[in-house]
Image 1: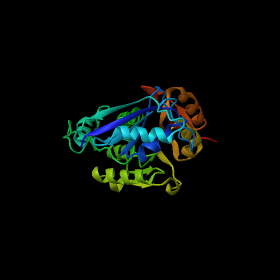
Image 2 (image 1 turned 120 degrees about the vertical axis):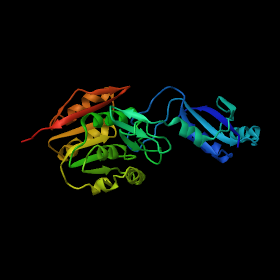
Image 3 (image 1 turned 90 degrees about the horizontal axis):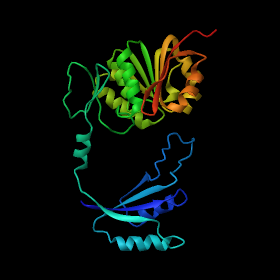
Image 4 (image 1 turned 90 degrees about the vertical axis):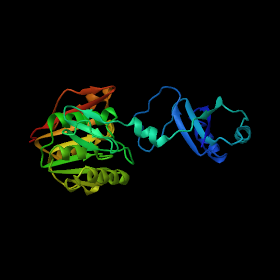
Amino acid sequence: MPWLQLILETTPDNAEQFSELLSETGASAVTFLDSANQPLYEPPVGETPLWSRTRIIGLFDAATDMDTVLIQISDAITPNRLPDHRISPLEDKDWEREWMDNFKPMPFGHRLWIVPSWTPAPQPEAINILLDPGLAFGTGTHPTTALCLQWLDEHGANHDEVIDYGCGSGILAVAAAKLGASHVWAVDNDPQALIATHDNAQKNTVADNIDAVLPDALPDLQTSLLLANILAQPLMDFAERFAAHVAPGGHIVLSGILAEQAEQVAASYAPWFTMEPATFKDEWVRLNGQRFNVN
């Protein structure tokens, strides 16, 4: 079915109002986009900030009388003046087919691959993780996930116990298990992430090696490896907690950190870990360190 897009250039003060009006006038979907090249990486807890210039796109059936839609929106605002806007057709495509075509197998290091289920593995003898985009974050395409996968590929995961904190889709937990970890605790506060992790563990025949749990259900245990791909502030907040979960000589791998945040995050872990220099990918970094004894 063909579609029409009504694109409005708004500000944080009126973006929510126009979003509601688009829905009320028949939009099948409403999307917010950055119109100011202003990334918002880590908003404060409980806040959902918008860009200084926010583009809102309402998606309408092509048969919609868009003149009437514009009049209805204009009548509902004060003053009755629409912001800069335009209407453009949206080509009808087989979106599922296009999505599948754009998600290709990806290598991470020398032996680890992420392979969508509909694609043959380019290197069948490699360690191939079957993973499709789905409910939770984490397909390896984001630099923070890629940095963690590269560490796992280089260092392996031949550990009795591993913690993947903020597991998302379970990609790191599955990778650790397939690289030799005896048991992985995949931890996330989002129940959808736990569902995705369980499904991906089953798909990769490592479900017996992975427990997907909420944070409160993580046992009080020490492991030889803790992976945490979350964000800088929670990484700093959880430093002491994470240190308690890593045995002396064990390793910690941290990601979800912007380059300008690396020094502060590393300092938060310095009381318990010998931290190595940051590894960079685009504007993101990975930090890793080894646990030492604390008297």
